[in-house]
Image 1: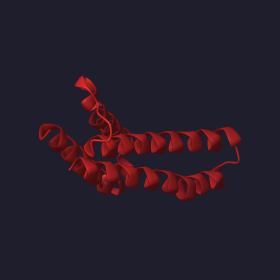
Image 2: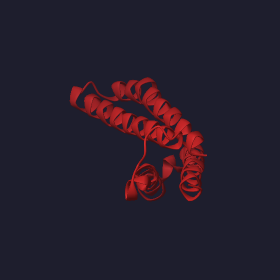
Image 3: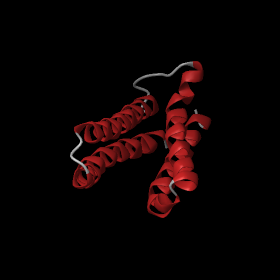
Image 4: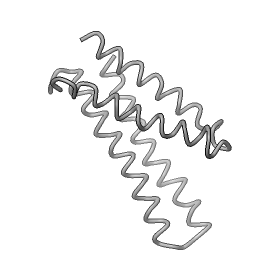
Length: 124
């Protein structure tokens, strides 16, 4: 379960970066040529994507027993995914409701990831 969660997180990180670079950046460039705005968005896209990649790799490595997270650190991967998920859910549900419907597939995938992560912790 943990390896499946880790692989899904890695795939989501790739999708995050590719979607941001191929869809969001070009759309922003249509609206503005401001390099600060474009650069800021690019930084946010890649910060989120690379963080997900790191969490996914740690999830896979711990589940495969290549590395060990001692004590409370065993909860760090699921905690980081939960922070990401809850932040996105809150913004989509309460601040930018217009994007809530299009983010439902993402929320379903992240819910599955979180369930797999929790189950992998509980079965250790």
